[in-house]
Image (tube, rainbow over the protein chains, first blue to last red):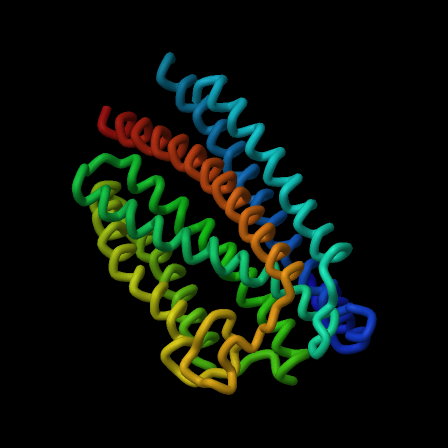
Length: 61
Length: 234
């Protein structure tokens, strides 16, 4: 997580608890982690498919 | 994968997205705010739901380990790895949201309370599982070691779950507990209980969806590894 984002989340938690800033920070963390994992799945899938195409190509040669 | 299974997975993915959005709307718009803790308490619904599915994932990995040792088919190794990975994602969310909640209610990000300590140990135990697998090149050996490790590591799940029931703890206890002053401290209203149940259901759907996607990836990687090994032997 970039340092600025951590600073922003820390600000939300420390400075805005009455307006639910810390609650919001919690949900932002959840969203970031889930989206990051989904992104990693997509990237790994695409990499595997590319490799599959290359392997099939080298098998037919 | 057959096109009908693809359609099921697509449907499940859409359902998961809607379930998460629906759960969030329920938490923010239709659930009363807890009197003592305020708005930060609303983290609790997702915090508990992710803990539930995270531990479920680790138990599933242990089950897959048992099945691999019995059947010796690699699909169970793929399932085990997928369950650990997805479980770790959810337990990480649990720990981080718990820290945010703790900062507000306990005035500290972390304390070596039994629940927090056992949860951290559980997460690290499964991080070690991934490291163990990464260190083994032979697929059969990797699957065997992984299965045995996943079965042994499974003990961390009931340790974490029951830690607040067997030890004195400052972590809130939803049901029962050894300390009469801390037992049933949550004091949830009916609406809160319904929201909690809905969040548990939503995250269970999300877990199944992510697990299925991860298993698909694992199957593709397995095929590639076999193809690479075959090419290397030729």
